Length: 178
Image (cartoon, rainbow, N blue to C red; front, side):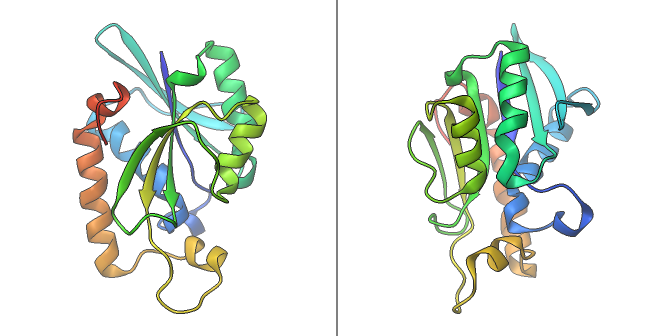
């Protein structure tokens, strides 16, 4: 069994923000692979599907980014998932726009959602799928930047990136590539 966590913030005002890239990926995976309907549990929305003999559970914490760890820890405990079978998908300001990276373990690089998950799980040994959103071009507060919506040109590129992640999903969860 694998938990696929998409980080974001609940609410319509954040729907198309850079910080909601994890939610956007999960929504696309959900539609692309025809997962079960979303359900509510442990301050999160989840949906599951079998890929062969393996059950995959998508989780979107509804606790706001900085408190995501509470929800993730509850799902991990309830479904008895090993740390190595948890994949967290999130925006990364330190990667160039559109770049992506799969890594197991490591620090949080200032991402408060990842920090919350590490703290609540008591480990950093989970998989991260980092998706680059780049840094603001002009001097701008980082939190304002990540909470702002993608530009018109960025949204097209982001949608292409998300589509590619969906198509590569089975390889990603086997830790072959990203």
